[in-house]
Image (tube, rainbow, N blue to C red):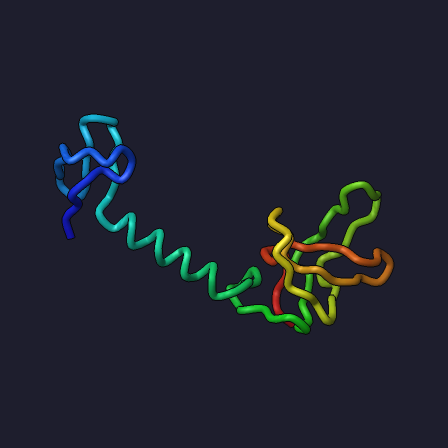
Length: 118
């Protein structure tokens, strides 16, 4: 695979040094496989929400919190090992992609990286 233009400035004056591509116009350097890795990462994200172990989560699953989580604006802590039933997957945009209810805390949003599938 060879590049015709720089991905940053679209200059045609690029050259290859070993496995590194270099643009002398904007000093951008990239690896040839960089574009393939980006598309693979995007495809993984589109597949769905994954837990801390990489398991695919779906709405209605039960999960277990893997570490103690401090709750912002509260003195409470969700203890590691707490089982949460009937989760809802959301796209909050702030990284919190699980909406659920936890006994003693009420409705709360969690990040999928801090839970594992039960």
